[in-house]
Length: 381
Length: 152
Ligand SMILES: [Zn+2]
Image 1: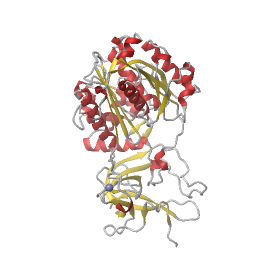
Image 2: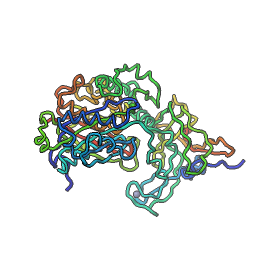
Image 3: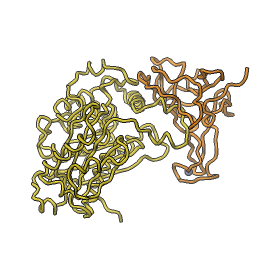
Image 4: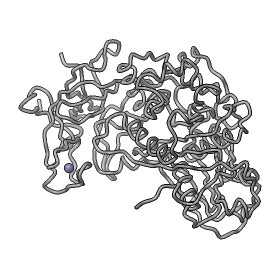
């Protein structure tokens, strides 16, 4: 029978690093990725030759970005592979790094996400199957439609949905790696540029450039390399899925429900025992969909918890303490890796002004175009 | 006057179905397993994987219910896609603002496309919708494309 991650040997996050997520600049992608990797190596207190394999999550750079970047860390001749899975590219890179270490094929692996904005034609436009008006329906309109549907179904006002952006901008203002580092009032968010439906610009994630790196290691490697076990965070579940047929409009929420349930079961954790949650909140309504899909509360109730401060840092469960995609940003490849980094900081108690006190269990969730879904559970040993 | 050319003949036809003769129909498919989908394709069923004769064309009526709508305020115009070497059709580009609707067809599938002749202030989920053809040509040829509007 197939195994789950926990059936294999334990895997730990031992090093995390970033290049700040930011608007498109002249900085070559190599100089986004390398600082993130060097920071993660320094965080783990290991050297590049200790890393046995690399998984590079990237969606927009084009073919074979990895070697041109990694070669500047010195020649090791170790394998690398690129993983493209739309918004979930970084999450997929992390999953496969974990699986390689858990399986015993490597003792230390790197998952790095790096991207710069660029035009990449989406493959679904090349299937040869036509569509009525997909050229007029970009992601923000997909989520504007879902916002309208959610608001109608649950009697929620647009200004309530926008509260997600208030919280996440407040968190992002405390994060030096966030694309947006400014707290915003509800009035500023609602009064911003209208985008689609009731979504305004500050309710949509910025897609810029940046990098995030995470090093995972086995217990053998932690001992052998003298890594501080007190700073190692165990990965106790990895779950992934893709959308079924007859896609209802809320397919992202449907696969989220199943995939989070799978991950929590693997880790033997109840939804309410998660202390820190990093979600794919590319658009405000998504946070409401996904905390409900997770089983934190009943459908339509998330807004009440949000208003009570339940999802604030220091609340019942900190939701997107990094600032989430809305404030931390969504440079595609780095996003899923950066979530793991944030949860690692939180579970170590190293998150500074963003620290959710006493955080022991974290969950990272991403969806990607397709749709695909990834969920990881991390726990402080 | 000659009959206008439909922009996407693979997806819809001016002729309605027996149930809804007065509105254009959509070209869907039905699998032997019972799955009804839009648009028609013969690559393989998304539910059961059957292919070939298991997938049959079915005309879907141009009638449904609005699930959601959104007034789009920002849109980056790109030239309509054309086959390599072919001249793109001479049609109006989408210009913001416009309204997109998500419509559950009474015959099963959900489609998303542009809405026309609607009042955004009163439009709400649950509204009955119908398909209609609107003129989109900018050249010598009369070209029509499918839209949805509120049923009267
Ligand atoms: Zn079938």
